[in-house]
Length: 413
Image (cartoon, rainbow, N blue to C red):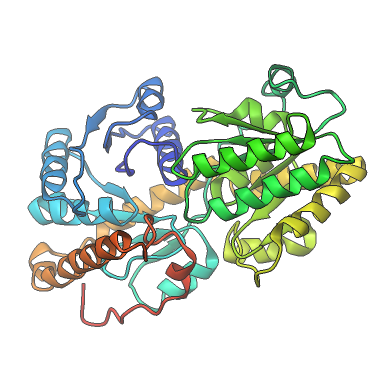
């Protein structure tokens, strides 16, 4: 299992939870990645860990591909599973090109890099992305982000967490667990703080923001100004928490997107899905099909997202039976559709299929230069755009990644 660097993030947590589930199902799993805080989770699960070299600015990094090939040879690995495009390409140009080891790729970002080789079995997290990618490549599997419902469930220390945070019994606790990233996250987090500030005048609201990242200084400033205006603590930033189960459990309502949204649902909490351009929408029966198609995220038409969220939260605060029924609905959806056990069984089938149908290296080698050249060209253009202040740090995890036209992959492997 080859996730990105072991920092706290959706793809990393998905990869490690799947690794743990496959290990429980009797498979030998080795985790290969750049070191980070989540290494303690790998070690707690009893999984071998092999550190990848730290990447410089260049992706994919040849030294990583070479190290991975050595690890695959030493452990006699059957399948390499890379998460997101740099690990996927490093697996293809490392162990696959060196020894023919099959590679499976997973992309949980909001856009799929067009230079990921089209022969590769690709796993994506939304039906919308799967439909697009099936027009472009040979094997696309839909596996929505799984949740370990045996670990994530009500009763995981929420009462103690509320006490530790000074949240009164009658307070309305709204929790968001998120990287404090500039892409995807920043806009919604600032809107949530503005909404909490607007509600604080006539409601005992507490907004708990769990996470860290480059947008933290701006978010801290907004939280500090909101608290000062209210004359009390309305917004609390906890910083990064390795396993925030107690904080999900402390919530009356969860805000979030992607894996974080699903994890909050596992605790039987009402969910308000966060997106961009003012998107906020409550999960209920009428919105479920939308989220199952496009993922736990959305793009609005612009306008005042804080006001939209304020209205949703005011309704939920006033109606406790509604909160309880929506929480029960949330938990049932995760258990029925997003369980980790189901994801493990699906991935066993994907790995077996990848072993049976892996392309011949010589056949792939005839076309191998084009995707690599396109990746390096992308990296050079992305680096220049970021330097000019025109590009996002997370290149395929932003609005434009979904909207931009991608070159045809005909004729490239």
